[in-house]
Image 1 (cartoon, rainbow, N blue to C red):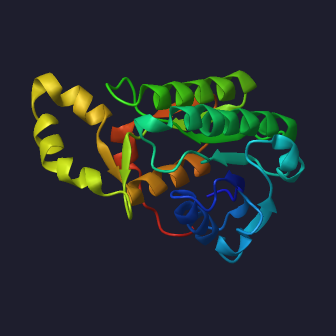
Image 2 (cartoon, rainbow, N blue to C red):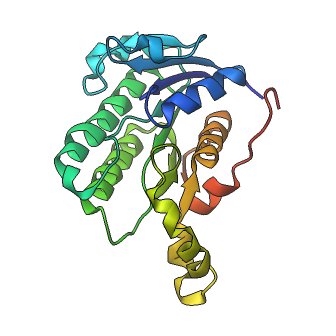
Length: 222
């Protein structure tokens, strides 16, 4: 396994605070973009970069010598009422990260997007789709992970839907949609992010829900 130098935005968020320690455990160098006052929330071994994810000028100079940038900034607990935040936070941060990655000579961007098409969360899907477009336009190799909902601490309301998903995934008329919009567990999502970091593509790679569920949880050093 090749050691990566990883710059993470959103390192203290729902996914970031689980991903950063796992990357460190596996021997990667990690720096995380945090707000002032949040540096203590990062694990030992992670270098804090204080800045604003919505303004690349506050962190762009600290991205080198990273070869990988993981973009995790987003609106907490997204729901249809937060359409304005999706554009002001999720989309702007993706664009700023893409521009910072270009300036820093990053070779791989990992971006958590969202499964589509879907009947709900139109504004969220639009913001994440435009985020993907900004990263594509950078010309940098990219991995787009497209979960629909990640089950974990504080994010368990959708667990009640698991029996329905189990049935829908087994019926031919609904199988494809249920799998594409399926629920993934937090551990599966972190494993998929680690897999993306450790195995960069040549161009653009899309990782949908079925692939996220299959991501291997490898021991350190494997």
